Amino acid sequence: MPAATADRAGWATDIYAALSALGIEPTSPNICAVLAVTEQESSFRADPAVPNLGRIARAEIDRRAGRAGVPAVAVDLALKLRSTDGRSYGERIDVVRTERELSEIFEDFIGMVPPGQAPVRRLESGSHRRPDAGEHRLRRGAREAARLSVSGGRLDPP
Image (cartoon, rainbow, N blue to C red; front, side):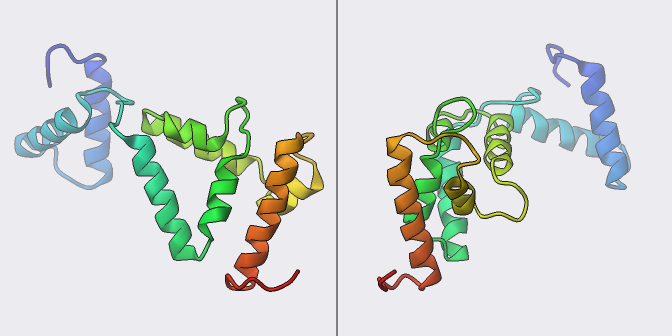
């Protein structure tokens, strides 16, 4: 382990616990392999910055939404919603630097929707907060996206 590593004892404990949990013997070759990968991937920082993480996350969101049949317009509208810190979820994802920050954004987003309710219904109920004029337009767009999703993307009359 590099001499300048902060909390060397903590890292050693975590590495030993991980090897033990995986049923891997803590031999010199195994420990050296773990140390090499950890150094390469994180430089022994618990929450390292990940280059282009926002772009990577957005591409994965779009990929999963497409696979689930969620229209891109619905994803775009959802990411325009204001989060608890006042920025939109999309704005927060655009500038995210670490996996911990990204997890916090996702937890915040998931937390705004009570279990068993769709995000559109939550917005329409007005229970999240009082919307501004822009959000009224967003609601109309979200309803349209939901209608398109239910109709299989056909432009059926409402």
